[in-house]
Image: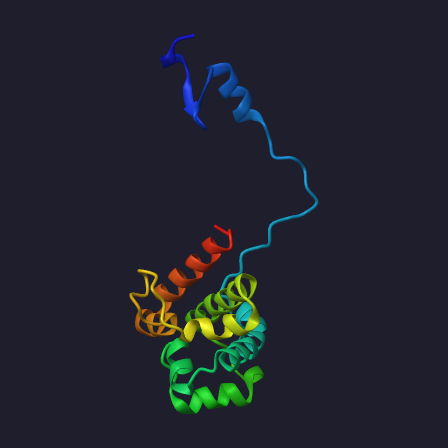
Amino acid sequence: MHPQDCFLLNWSYYSPEQETLLATRAYPATRYEPSPLVDLTSAPARERLSPSALKTFFTIVEHWRLRDEDARTLLGGVTNGPYYEMKRQPGGRVLDPDRLLRISYLIGIFKALNILHGSAIADEWVQLPNTNRIFGGTTPLAYMLRGGVTAMQTVRRLLDARRGGM
């Protein structure tokens, strides 16, 4: 066998015949199906998700002991009136796709923190100065407030990687 007749995969050589065999193998059968993707541009989907998303968001705000101003910024700059209305009556409002995405990232961050740490540290983590180069000595909260959705995604990815989810 000549090296030009082989492909380098997973640090070993496979012949063209072995490569064909590997390419034709299928995943084993399973009874689990992947969850369907949620279309956040769909009004019915947003109507269904908004009440529970808001309830969960305000639970996270309580756990993290966020100021209302910071919570409003995390939601994308909600003004006082609508914010307090959402807080008082989370079932009465349909969120736009951006706010649902923001809340989704925050729920993922909250979940990852509670998997990685005990609840006391998980609840304080966003308010603690962090030496990770992403945060540059500031708090994860300050980073997310300054960076918006992109920063929330970065924090979520960091925590998912730490817990072995990525």
